Image 1 (cartoon, rainbow, N blue to C red):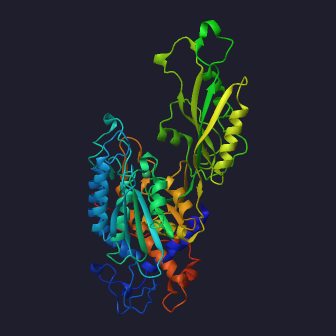
Image 2 (cartoon, rainbow, N blue to C red; image 1 turned 90 degrees about the horizontal axis):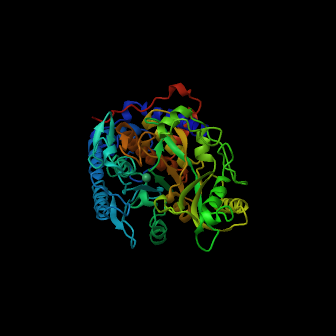
Image 3 (cartoon, helix red, strand yellow; image 1 turned 180 degrees about the vertical axis):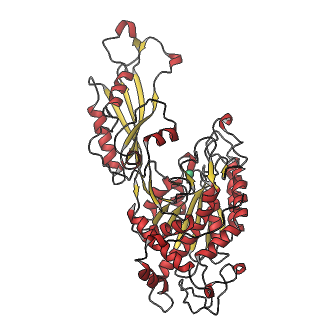
Length: 540
Ligand SMILES: [Zn+2]
């Protein structure tokens, strides 16, 4: 927590310094920062190769983002009107439509090499790139254009695929998860009006909402194309509306299927009941052993950690997720620790006779799918072994049990001191005008482990403009328009800072040191002098 906030404050102070530059650094807004100001003696911090070229300031970017925001919002609304539900029960044709719409959006935003990436049986992903200045870092921008099913129509206050604004938020399926992410990337690129200071690649996936089924195949086929120094995944959430956040941890996942057999075939429960155990009872005893009496995970030997509680109260939490009155919550310590840095176990499904088919017999076989979220720092292999060992030790009455390991996803923990994280923290702090909060995510994001595996040196940034009230997988999904606007600006500023950081790391030249020198000078500036970037809120 502290690492990011302190750095962000320092850097935000720096940003203020940039904004406080005397007027001779300013330039005509209509040129959007692309025209040199001959009167300025200031060296060009980006060290761009084109002499007489000056990169846009944070303020220029804010102006550009605001001036473009009506279009940005319109693009989001247009994408939301395409019901690109990737669930197999929905019409896959719409995924083709949304991929084409995204491709068009990228092309019209100045992205080149735009094309659909296809894998047999997968919904299409969209790729594009922008060549930046020579020697600049390569940043891969990720989002997904598919959405969750809308769920019960009667629970929506307005039609899911007809975006509507209410109270400063735009409502519709996919408006937050994750079409805002798609449009955000395009709008951030446009803020540079053709002079993006880094190399950009875009990868807009088409089946994230169904678990990124073919992601491995995409990475196998297109891995080289997707290689990057920094990967920005705009598919996470802000802690609260208006509170800029970076996701620094993700839990991993292992699961297994437990199959119990007690008889060759079902027998009469009146005749033999009390002698042979039924398979459901055996399974229930094994499952019950997975938690202690307080609801903590009882499997031994698992990694477990603590997270800042971020002021989240149990009351708030209960009403946010709709816990049925009177139910005690499981586990102990802060809720954020429990959700982000502790293992958790859920039983996802049971194969056993349906009640409608129940007869008076001793059920001979039953199966359960047991899923365990694993904490950052935990290796999936060790976690799976611990889970299996625990279940085996819990088998009652020498029953015959088969445990088949299934999914295995690594947990993720970002290096919060890493320069890319610091750049994003600064950018978010400036764009939103507030301290950046480090959050965890209890689930995993398949693309993160895929990129980690394919490009282990890439620095991964996870953020997003959804928030705790966005109802991302539920009816009445929404996004804050103000946060959407701030998110676009934050990404634009971050790209600028990444370029600047990279240029400062290049071999010293007379044009490369200005910003670095200034940051050292301003380190001791009191926090209270931090001035967030003021820019117009998005129009109604
Ligand atoms: Zn998503």
